[in-house]
Amino acid sequence: MIEILQQHWLFLLVGDYPKGPLGGLAMTLLITITSMVLAFPCAVLVALCRTSGIRLFVWPSTAFVYLIRGTPLLMLVFWIFFAGPVILGFTLSAFATIVIAIVSFQTAYLSEVIRGGIEGLPKGQTEAARALGLGYFVTTWKVILPQALYNVIPGILNNLTAIFKESSLAYVISLHELTFAALQVMNFEMRRPFQVLVLLAAIYFCCCFALSQTASWLEVRVARKRERDSGLIQPNAQLAQA
Amino acid sequence: MGYDLDFSVVLSGRYLEMLLSGLATTMLLFVSGWFLGLAIALVLTLIRATPFKPLQWLVAAYVEYHRNVPLLVQLFVWYFGMPQLLPLSVNRFLNQHNAELGFAVIAVSCFMAAYMSEDFRSGLRAVPKAQREAARAMGFSFLQTMRWILIPQAWRIALPALVNQTLHMFKGTSLAGIIGVVELTDVARQIEDNTFRVFEAFGVVTAIYLICTLTLMLGGAALSRRFQLRT
Image (cartoon, rainbow over all chains, first blue to last red; front, side):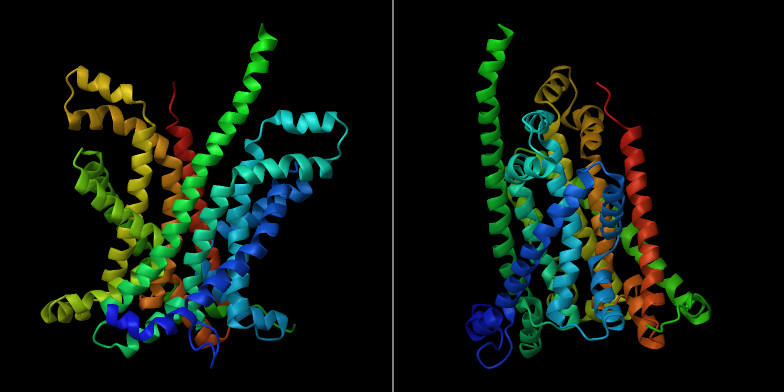
């Protein structure tokens, strides 16, 4: 296995990059980061729609979330890959296809996480802000979102891990990312497919394990901070009772 | 756009048969994967509940592998990697008996088991410690405590997560098409390939997936309402 790594590490890392298209782990990272950056604002928007209480916004956003949650990502990739060109009139690149698929998919999941954060805040926050005369948008932007998003940082990180894993589906549409590169190496190392695949799994494992461990570490920190914050309020509450 | 939707092509004759057999394969993958996964998960949870450290680490490693490696790569490891480790006679047997489906079932159930056992474990941990201690003090054995005291409470706590995971796994079966199992997603692609009817082929299959997943979601919600913990 060390031998395979010695021979192919550059290919697994960046593909044919200086001479050809970018590939390998670098491509996987590029897909992951692009998808996350695009999915995040969309998810906040959908979460705000779902918590707005206005039917015109609640219904379409709820329908969207259920529709996406009920469809396999691979199906979504095929929709965009095959139906996209028919609708748009021009072909999408494989990179655009996978990014659009993951963004629409993760917008739904991430919006659920963010909605949980928004609904998890004490009602008093909105009420106090509104009582102070802040409008809906200022309340959302300055009071609700900063707290809600802070509280769901671990959840967001878990979604980032999910995106990292989902980017492996780009293999299906022949985008030269990590899985694709590894399968090319596997075809090269005909006699040792198992070793190559274990290596591939190990690379994914290291990246995702680091991410998910960070997420659970942050979870503890966020929980502690919230405890401390509520601890700050409690003495006052006791005073009020006395 | 000038595209006439015509579902009759996809919903009749040969293609209807393909769709139905694809659906059957997906269901087979899902049901067998789920029950096998459940069985493995129960064993894993039991092992993790025993106070023997190295075994616990082994289970933890199993769970972390399945949670941190994409399902697609797990499928590849089983389908492309495993035959190298198996003796020739076994491989020959497998190739005559639909190896793709067999490996897909194994991969999906191992994947499911890892997540399920995590859900069980957090369910068990959420039951107050005093419950176990009280049961043991009253003379219940380890297994009896599990059977009568802990599991009835734990699975109710774990139910929402389990439903989510079931959904996740059901959608995961679509990946089996990539290693050559002719399931629903693969059938959609084949029909599209033959007829160039993009919207009909993917529309019908997406609708089937949605019907199944929405049923699962509604069923899960009904179950957790029915078995709510009353305290």
